[in-house]
Length: 107
Length: 117
Image 1 (cartoon, helix red, strand yellow):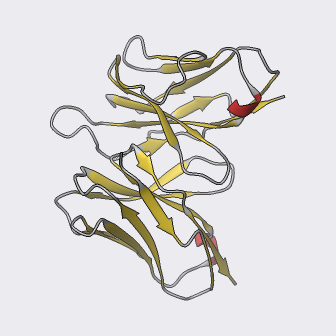
Image 2 (spheres, one colour; image 1 turned 45 degrees about the vertical axis):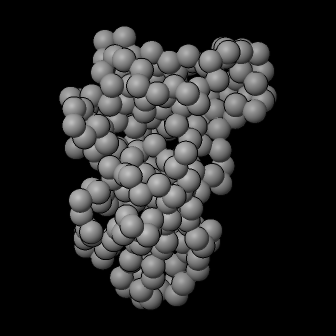
């Protein structure tokens, strides 16, 4: 069974810093990896989807990379803002989710 | 912008009662997912539909949970009887996915927060 791990569980940074969130998975035979944002008590908002044939995707200040051979994906957030504070989750094949990284950006 | 609709947003029910959740996916999306999310954890898949057919319900506690998507559009998830441990957020998502790549981008509804007392 696919296992998805996200480290760290929580991260606190000052506003303006660049940061990297990590996601690892145990089975490299994947169709896609998707990054989501979740605000407290709300559903998940899709941020970036990387298909298995792709190495990275970018949207605004966000960049996600995928290395299937090592079972890793990273989400890079540039110039962090207080509004970026949320829990960030990664998911493999829409089926297997990590437990998330809770990000706090301090003004 | 098209959205996944879920209702109700919040539900409080007594132990041993029946409860039902409804989900209307984005129009044209063939794949529909139901997940359960316990506070502080990631969502766990309960059931996956492709049109009206169940693709995966291996994690659905079938003694008390049931799910249907009769016309391949909207879906209902039912719990009967509810137990205290069922308190969680129930999330629905949909994706276009069909054919050669069933796993396309997933879009989530706002969820139903269930509290069993």
